[in-house]
Amino acid sequence: MPYEIKQVETTPSPRARKLIVEPAPGSIRSFFKPDDAQGDPLGEALFGIEGVTNVLIHTAFISVSIAPDQNWKTMLPKLRAALKVAPAP
Image (cartoon, rainbow, N blue to C red):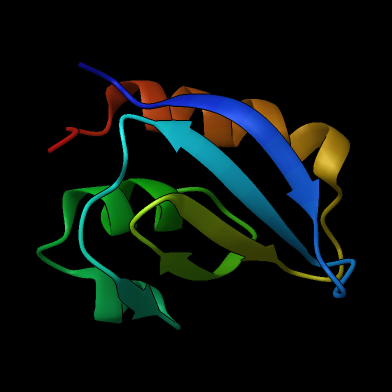
């Protein structure tokens, strides 16, 4: 079953969003660069999007940060598409 974003929440940082997804993403892990995500299909899928700068995967949500030259209007559809093809636990 692919991931689906159920809700998007703002964070104190304008460069980050908290994505409430189903199914739950599993164990807690964080990645600060693409190489860190090697071997993690979800992390690799999100870092496959140009402009993603770090990813925190929690048991109930995913937090994604983007580069200053990116905007959420264009990034959210890319994140939705990546999550639809990322293998879920």
